Image (cartoon, rainbow, N blue to C red; front, side, top):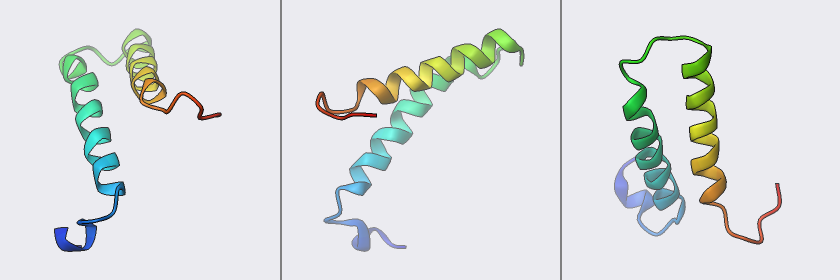
Length: 60
């Protein structure tokens, strides 16, 4: 798909925000050992980022 197809669709901004938040959350984890603590930190860090970005009246 070229960017013209996404021009007026708000999904593009959603994916841009998701990409930015994932990169910022995982940037600290790049050189950490692959163990249970690192996996838990990454999982909860990403969960926190996406839950905080939901609108206040959104129900899971």
